[in-house]
Structures are given as C-alpha cells and as structure tokens.
Image (cartoon, rainbow, N blue to C red):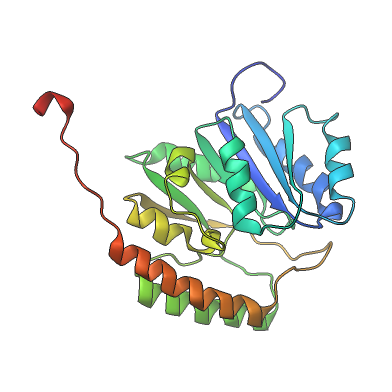
Amino acid sequence: MTGDERAPALSVVVPVHDEADNIAPLIEEIALALDGLVAYEILYVDDGSEDATDAILAALGHTYPNLRTLRHRARAGQSAALRTGIRAAQAAWIVTLDGDGQNDPADIPALLQRRDRAATRNMLVAGVRVHRQDSRAKRWASWVANGIRRRLLADRARDTGCGLKLFPRAAFLDLPFFDHMHRFLPALFGAAGLTLIEHPVNHRPRIRGRSHYGIVDRALVGLIDLLGVAWLQRRSARPTVEPEDQQ
C-alpha cells in the first residue's frame, strides 16, 4: 500500500537469490513508478540467499511499510519463489519482475494501461525486451530456444523469458505447478483460456551481482520442460459451464 489503509490493487512479486546489491535500488525504482498511481504492495521472496539479502530486506522494511518479505529456508528455484509470493499476495493483480535490476519498474504503468484498455480482464500482459542487454551467446541461445518453443507450443509469445509480466492472481494459482514453469507462462495461460497481450519494455545490463544461470544447463532443463508443457497442452480441457439459471 502507499502509506494509507487501502487494500492493495497490485502486488509486485520479486523472487531473489543472492541479490543483496540490487535490492535497495530496485525497491526505490518500484516506489518511484507506483507511488500515487495505484495502491500496491511489494513482496520479495528470498529464495535461500547466502549473502546479506535477508538483512537488507529487513532493514528496508522500516523505510517501505508496503514491503513484505518471505524467505525459503533452502533454495527452491525461481518458479517456487514466484508461487510463494503470489500465494501470499493480497491484491487480485500481480506484477512480476526479476530481482537482478535488468527489468525496469518504470514500465509497470504502461502494462497497467494496456490491461485497462483491453476488452477483457482475462489476460496476461507480457513484456517484450526490445533491446536485449545480454551477451551475444545468451541472446543467440534465447533466439534458438524461442524458435523451438513457438514451433512446438504455438504460444505466439515473442519473449517468454522476460520477467516483467502482469496477470490475475487467481488465474496463476489455477495453473499446474512445476519447477521452471515461469519460463512457459504464455503457453500455460493460453491453455487456460487467457488472452496474451505483449508490450515492448526496457531491458538493462546487469551492473551488480552475477547471473545464477548457465547457458548450457538452462538449455538442457528447458528442453525437458518444453516437452512436458507440450504434453500438458495436449491434455488440457476447458469445458464450457452453463449459467446456473439455464440448468
């Protein structure tokens, strides 16, 4: 919330692991983007960090009363951290972003505007990084992976790996949970009947800390998960329920 007693209309969920140097700058940017715009809360999920992440979050709680912190005793992965935060969220709408500072919180208001202009609220608004600030090898690996994913899943998503997304909390909690599911949210939401809306967003170089993912291990795990999501798509069924007054 923004200093008053209103229930939050938006929950900003940020999973982190050993991101001590990025926490304070990113929270300040989130506040600058959302203060006075919407009643919001910030949920950081510390996924078993071994650096000063926990202590810094505790200290910042005195400065930002709308900051909430949850902590995994041991590292469980980004998807598990997202699910922990979303389950604990108080708002009906969720914004997610990565905790490494590469997603720009200044893009969040534009995602909210896209939601508000849409004909339906049953949607996923997904950021698309128009100018990737990653290494050439990482960009190439993402290009290959995105091509394979689009061909196999037909999810139409241009950049499923962007951490900046806006969606209804209830819709996320209805999705099947598995490790690494966060990489396939457009396909999973699409199978659940949600409309995909994409919006170009800023992408910044990582200037603090280090990446926790390698290109090779991400590719190997991603291929296995991709086959699993394709299986889920083929087995998904969305029955049409008649209104009660017509039964």
